[in-house]
Amino acid sequence: MRYVATASLLIIALTSQALGQTGPAPAGDAVTASRTEMRELIEATQAAAKASRENVDYARVVPDLLYQILAKLDKIEDKLDKVETTLKETQASAARRR
Image (cartoon, rainbow, N blue to C red):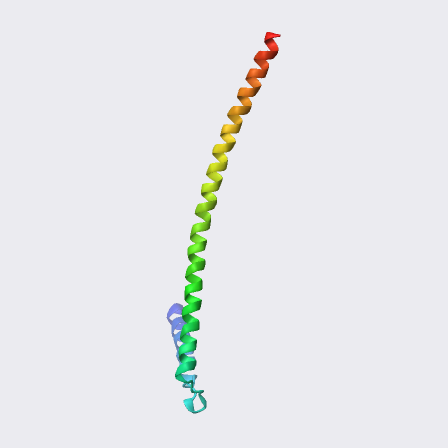
């Protein structure tokens, strides 16, 4: 019973807020725009959309490139480790021969 009373009070509060709102302001003081202004606004919006698409593409490509660079660096590091261990082994064997 308590839940029903709470729900009904909530519904009454929300509907009274909705009924208390006024309609949109009349368009008597609205600014009229010319066709050239509207065209410029549309072109600016299209340019902004193109720039954001390029940013998204860049954001997708950069991590892939970084991943590829890191993979190459890991391979180079492994090869250097192999060369280093080989050098140590040859120096150790050369020192034992003397």
